[in-house]
Image (cartoon, rainbow, N blue to C red; front, side, top):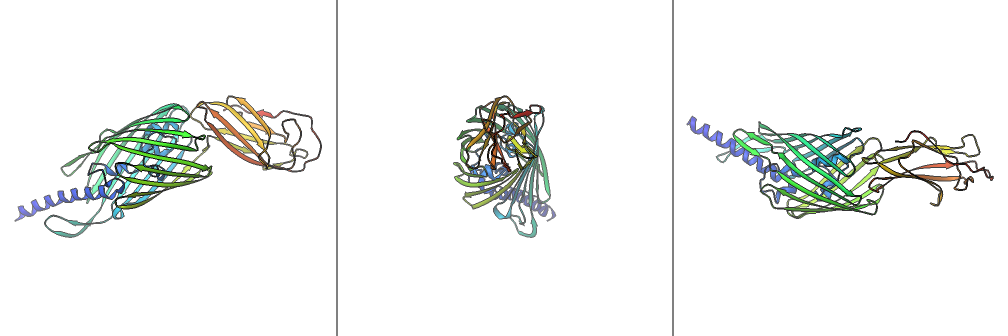
Length: 427
């Protein structure tokens, strides 16, 4: 009798572990239709509302911390320190969370840390012989350390990760690695290739050994209208799964608002979303439709430093060319992965008319001073003016930032024409 009970207990425990794994695979709804129990399903869900709204077609883009999830080489395009967090509630109250932190360095590449966490909540324990009063939960987590290096045209990246799983008190840990490359032969086109789980993790629970599936991803992004609109496509092949095509589109109708849409052919999963950007903060939303219903995903990103590639600021909000404060100084900072080929400063009046401009080759100076003169050296009238600073990188891509200044106390007279003073060391 004792032997039978021991065999029943052992068999029941294995059945419990197997049932738990199946439940977690189903709990990631974006994958439920197609993964068919392939190990590591939750690792193919996503890393941000942006990536999910784009249908997962993000292997060919870079420049934000969350790209480490899809292609570590995308980190090579990260310009400033950045943190991203994402949260979603999946099937049966399963919680899915992701976080990433990216740190570019001067001449030493880009480092990143990321974590993925899944918690299934409470399930009723049972075996094939009887129901039990106990409950259990499953938790899974991935901790990753990534490194990327490259220029604005090409980059490579690698990720080392620790993957842990705990089912009803039985736990296991495996170690793996990803490889990726990123290419941007033209400002309108970028390409990415990733080998996820190139170093294949193996997790053992009790005596059940599980190898996580390997995935090869190839992606492209085509940009239009100075990067305000882009079309993305990925081809994805995971062990024991059909070839998957993922596509997405992203449109910035204005500087602070972005709209997205995407589709995954194998999972027959459509998605859409939007994002709002204010200064260094960005909040993104995604709505994913799938066989088990709908999933809402929200993520937030904080960028530190010069988040737009260039930043212009003024030492005063208003000045008087004929008073004590006769000029305004504009401080200029840049943060690009490539070289600055050209810079341009334009001053526009309240009607958008150009009143003063400077165009020079090479990187911009640290400071530009304006005394309120137009192109002919005459003082402009009172009012509000926009100082627009634009730099062109080695791919021909423009980066722009603006600051507003106000002129007060104009006297109707003409100064002797002078030139704008440029001072400070070049970046």
